[in-house]
Length: 167
Image (cartoon, rainbow, N blue to C red; front, side, top):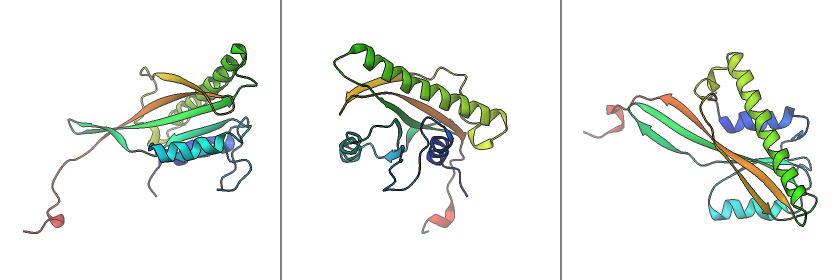
């Protein structure tokens, strides 16, 4: 079975106590969402976040990156959200952002731990490089968060497979 980074992220959401994600479309404890980056995909997610009260993680399903010099550098964007008590109070908003940032730090620490334990599928993520993150919010009903884009760099062979062509 091929490794899929979104499955790794969802698993972390299941085992991380502050989230305790329960998979399933209709689950009341669904805390992980995989969404496309189109306007429709994000607006569908945003329409549902308003009724939520628990922190959550969202990952873009897009396949974006760069191919250069025999390397495929795929980017994975992950959002971490927490809800503020009020948008009227700047301290509440900041606290929600810092909570979301804490989730991001915990996730990165878990990734590093798995790398150190020898999980081969994560060896291509360079967590020692500078990985920038940005804040987001407020979104519907006082949601704030941070998002980070991680790069998965793998060597790839770019060669023609003659079986795929008509001669």
